[in-house]
Length: 134
Image (cartoon, rainbow, N blue to C red):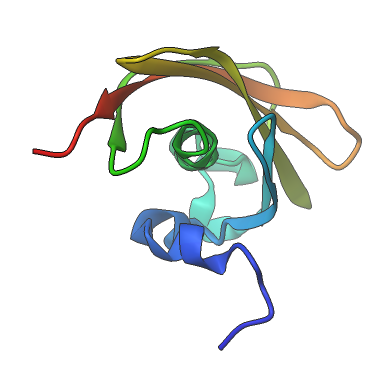
């Protein structure tokens, strides 16, 4: 048993666990998470790999989308666009996701990643399909 009230969300996403993602707030208007710089998440020169940044954005964005699903529905990412603005070289990356559009068949979220100095590292906009139960 854990004291982390949001661990159940991350446990549903093994890859998010692999990168060390932790959720710190989950709500309809905003989902917040974080993960720490690690050498095994880097590309050349000790810079966080874009894939690690996008994985964190996709995971936190999915949790954000899930806050708006109708009873029994699930979600899957159908489109994702990321802009990378600066290198993540150390410390903790803060991840903030907010809904831009909540519709019947899709949900669009924007997820921003920041370094410890609150400088934007990247921004991801993704569309999540609303999958009704069969």
